[in-house]
Image (cartoon, rainbow, N blue to C red):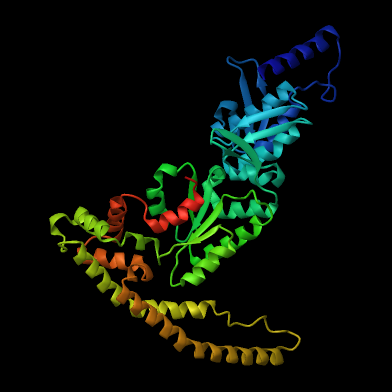
Length: 440
């Protein structure tokens, strides 16, 4: 920029001293006009003022609402953006292919978004390729312009595949991935139940730590949220078969084999159901639990062998039958769909409200007649599981493990983590699902 300033100064000197011209603001040659415009587009309300040549070193002056600063006072991200833009202007790049690697480094999301907006406007005819992991940049470009670099064949070759064929797909990813960014675009994305510190995520990340570069596990808060997310993703996946990196895994809860199989079949291989109530059920193995108890309690553990610790787990399962039955009935209330089909019609409020009330009364009566049947079937299933030994899969593993942690006098997370550490390999139930998501 100092060269531009010197060029302007020399040109002005030549016009005034040699040509004896009268120079006005209208006839003054200002090489910084376009630079000021671009600077304003990126950094308003800051303004690029000028280069001061009568100082050593030269000063690059920028005005701000709180006073003047110099170019070196900008943040690293701001300086990086200005350097990219200025280089395109200085080289006068037109009808060119421009490759920029990770332009979002050190950038605030808002500035990254401006970068995506402004780069195509700097010079006409340019094809700009940004290698980025920044969600804000990807959201600002046309859906058909987003590509994912993926391994193909023997894994030694990469191929660029279009990622978003619709704005809906792009917006879905933005909502689901959030601040994880688009680093997940090079991975398989697996949505899970639970909070951000979710147990499923911890266990899977631990068991598949050696595949961390291939898969990202993303918690989705609840069964309801996971189901809604998976339904939306599945619907979008129908638009383009290349979106083969979205998956979802949910707890089995009290679903039957038939219900779980039907749910998986409807998802066409994208939504999976554990074959146990919780992922923690896979930790309810005699050898795993006794080793974990000894690891956290040492010689103080109250259990002499694996049989004793499993007897304690079964005793805990027996104590939660009533709680589990109540949960099943509550789930039936929440998912029965017995609610008005629409709001009260304001053109006939009394008549319509009366009609809705009668319909709800009928539905409530039907709901009441279903409760004994559901309760009896659930209770029979739980008691049968206690008799035939399948309780380690049918009862909530998280509840049992928490109860066991209380029995040995340690925090639940401590016992759970110790049990995960004692697993010599991923349990069969987890392998069944993950081998369909991660190729061998």
